[in-house]
Image (cartoon, rainbow, N blue to C red; front, side):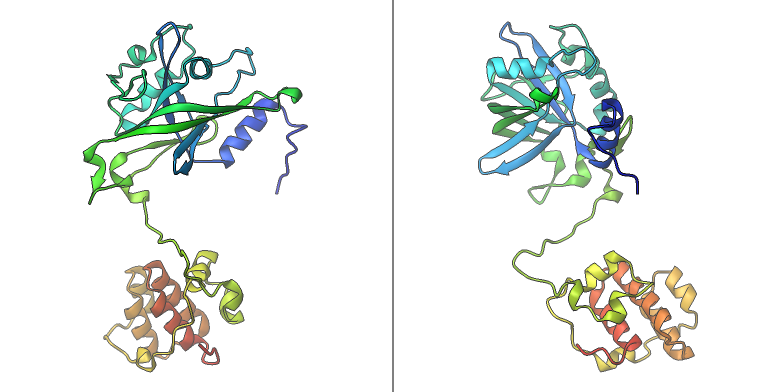
Length: 313
């Protein structure tokens, strides 16, 4: 593993390294207005949410290292105390890129990028009408980061006063990430697109406590077949399930372990193993892993019990 010391790495290199590792990052399309009335629109990937009661988000408008210029967004929010933030979707990707260009002070990036202004309710700054998710924000606090060391960063805290959501991205009254088509910033010139096939659900444990890795039997914890994610699923049960004596009963005429695993049929693969008498430890671990890939933790545990008769639930 390569280790970097920020104190000795040139800023341009450190910027790329940091933002490649801290990724993907959501992109905020921040609109602001100068005291003279000029509207500005700029994308920020130094952006996230930090509280929900009351809603608080933050952006990081940095001072340019090359020119020493401060961003219009930063200056406008400090001067007027308000802004809007709109989510960036894949459908406005190149418009976002246009708005990121360093136009002269006073340029309206809504016009340059061909985006539509939607009137806000609580602030005097429009949001992006094409965006499915937008927030009206007021300034809370700006934190300058390490100016005494030549630092160029800021953390600007903003309180959310209104949120606008298009009904087209809702499923059963909730925002559905599969419908938003968001883009996210990676390192260097890389971006990511949040398509339906990359979205998945993972229920949070809440107050229910899994048994943990340390409670897994050593033969399972050290398996060369099971991955860390596999073991994590096994360790998430509230207690090791009891053995099901009937689980080892053959239920089908399957006769090929490999064909059934390729077809993602772990139950049939197990039947084939039982019928053929091929119940060695690692074959059963492979079948258990196939169950886990389908989210069937219970069957995975029962398969592992067959591999390790000495394991006591």
